[in-house]
Image 1 (spheres, rainbow, N blue to C red):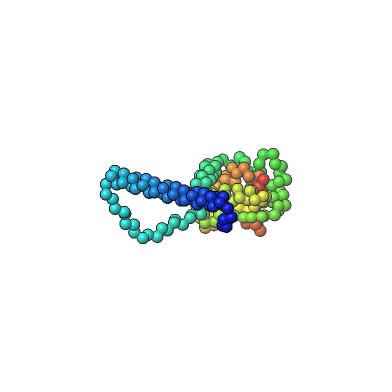
Image 2: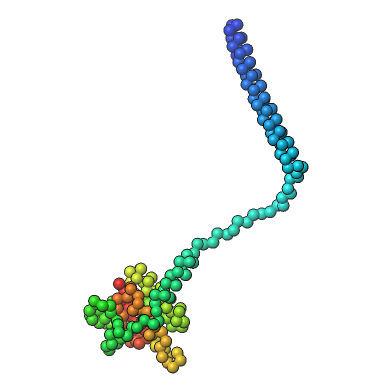
Length: 209
């Protein structure tokens, strides 16, 4: 900075004085902060007595591996509902129509529905085979199958329950139960015994809503 007059010199002295005052104020503020920290440290030591820093071991923290969320409780609830909703004691005989092949249709549906179902008017879109399953397993599998097919918009499915040739007394164990279970499912509109080419007496062709 070039000084051209006495006024410039006075201005320079003023600037230098302001900077010095600012630095002095900053230094005083830092000194007071340190004094305060020292005082707080001494107060802490007087309050708790002599202390030593803890020795921390070098450990590697492994976060838990995330587990895929499974709706386990909902699955259990749904299985429980299916077990309660499909009763083995349901009297189905009065709802079945005995003709050349056992059939069922909901009230309000004409006999042509069963006839068309038996003649293959609706093509079979999916099937479930209950062979080898225990009663509880078959009940839950059938309930889940019917519900999934209905939710996916399928209309005609086949349920294979077997002819009981491998059962004691060569009597079909699941056939009567499957009839009871299907009648209780609100998604089921009708069913008939399958044609020989589709399983005959060992299977049912089911029409869904």
